[in-house]
Every structure is written in structure tokens, then in C-alpha cells.
Length: 196
Length: 126
Image (tube, rainbow over all chains, first blue to last red; front, side, top):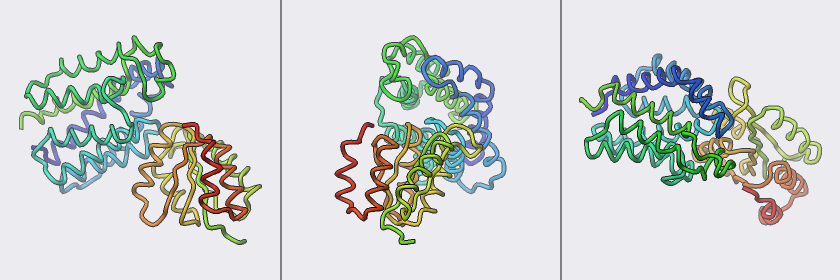
């Protein structure tokens, strides 16, 4: 069951992790992209945090929607529309059922896939979303599983996004979008959402 | 000024690129409504959904051909188009400069939608 408070808290913890790991995410992105994933995400998170702290939200849908709009407009890079579409999907699903976290995350994953036209194994953020949702369904989600999913992207070859221009040279680097998605799910665990 | 039926929209990661291309197009297509969105809200490199949405709305035409440079511009443009209620926007995967130039000059010459699309088709690169 998600509530306005839990969801807000989750997203603010996510923002905090992104600020902490900003340089690391930039570093990951320098290897296979344009080096700004950390800075872009931090800029989006700042806008999101301001909206969340100012807002009076009556339901979970509105919280995710506010997050989505902030990221769409402030991130600047491709992760803006991707996370924006994820949160938009989660908002819609949250609007019809706040109790089913798996369904909400699945709607988020679908949002990313539709926008990015990506599939599993292409070295993107969805290579973290898919195993996280599977683990959540079997009630076995842990930080180890999240970290493992993030590290799995290291040996994948990118066929989507900026990294795909590098072809084989993308192998050997963790995908920055996968890493930031890892922080989203770690924040979800830290926020105690599963304990509810 | 005799406003044309179709408008042109440019989205770029860089404000000067979008603005410069728009200036170039306007030289050739004086009566075509051409609007652009370039850079993030803070003027950095990137694209902003909000800026794109605003520039699409500000275009005088109700039916537009939209051109973009790279990945996130396309995705933000797609989202803006999905949310657009009273305008028809054709998202073109063509080379940015050549595509926008072709469309603008044909619109200026009162070409039909089919004629414009036919000329844009070989310029599709994305």
C-alpha cells in the first residue's frame, strides 16, 4: 500500500541518493555516453524535491505526476523523458489502485519501454526494473538483488541510446541509467514501503 | 502576411542551433509559422518538455511538421504531441536541417501534405 507520505518520502530519499552519487553517475556516463547523467539527474531531482515539498497532495497519483513533470522539464537528457514516462505510468496505475506496488512498478516499466522502445538485455535501466519487479513479486527483493541487477549491465552490449554508438566498446561498463534506477529501488527499500 | 496552412517546429539540444536554423528557414519561407525550443529551462544543453510544449502551442498553424536533433528531443517531443489537444503534429525522423528546409520551402510554395511527405521520405535517417 502506497500513501502520499510514503511515496513522497521514497522520492526524496531517491533524490538524496542521486545527489550523493552525482559524480559517480557522471563518471559512468563519461565511459559510454556524454558524461552528464549525474548532473542531469541531480538537476531534475532538485526540481522534483521542490515540487514535492511545496505540494499538497491528496493522492499517490498526484505525487508521481508532480515528479514526472519536474523530470520531463528539468533533466535535459534522455533520462528526463524516460523517468518522466515511468512516473507518468506509475501515476496512472496509482490512480486506479494504490495498494498494488507490483502493478504500479510494472506500469512504470511499461512507460519506459514504450518511450525508449527498449527490450531486456540492451544495457538500459529496464535491465534493473525487470529483475526488481520479478523479485518483488516473489517477495524476495533485497539490496543485493538490486545491486546485482545493476552490475549485470556491465557485461551487456548497448544497442539502445547514446551508448549504442560505441558497440562492443560499451561492454565492461555499468550502464548509468541502470545505476540511477538501482538508487530508485534502494530508496524504495530504505523508505520502508515494503513493510507496510 | 499570408499565413500558410502548415507550420514548422524545431527542437534541438542547443538554443543557438534551433534559433539559427529557424532564422535560416525564415529567409526562405517568410509566411510559414516556424517556432523552436532549444536547450534546457536553464539554458544548458538538453531539451525541456515544457519549452517544447510552449513553442508548439505558440505556433500559429494548427498542423505542424516537427523536426529534432537527437534522442531526448524526440522523446520529449513525443510526450508533448501526445498531450497536445487541438493541434496535429507530424514528427519527422529526417535529417534536421535538410528536412526542415524542405518542408518550409514546400509549405511556402503551397505544396500539399502528400507532396511534402513525398519529398521528406528520402531524408529520413533516424
